[in-house]
Length: 203
Image (cartoon, rainbow, N blue to C red; front, top):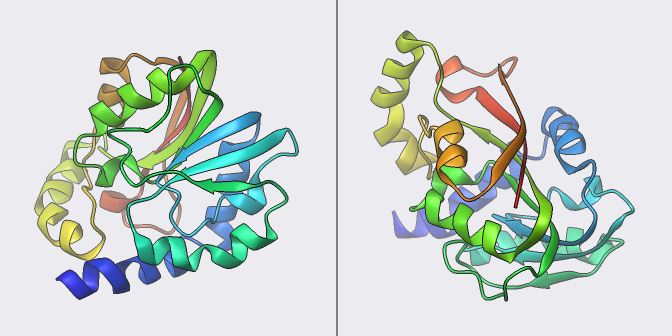
């Protein structure tokens, strides 16, 4: 599993998450980002082409060295500077009230302690600044939930994440205040893996 999780899984994510359909979601989620942006789960940099011109820089937190390597071309082409700034969203190396915006896309499902990560994001955002996010997670349909629980073990091995992360509960328990949160099933994706939470939460 070491070689797969360190080298193959990030390449799989790079291909799967780089489609035009994901790009449309990224356009929506990135809209409204401003100033210095903290991105947790930077991955291979797929969000960079979708950043609005009001963004002045990105501080990227990413645990996978392979994903960071895969991001090089996108970082080089980025119109804003990208600072590689750590590998653990649960312990951010920044002072309080540091950032104007924050971003996470399909990340919380794979963080060991997502609540702690959200608390850290809230700490480093200036008051009133927003976290923009999209995540897949717990379906409201009990039948789909059962399939999510059944598939968790395999999905954790293959994709490195949980299918049934309760994103709404995590946000409600965090120091952030939900400003908007839309939910839907993603078209063309099996329902256990395709229930999306998309929105913003403010510090």
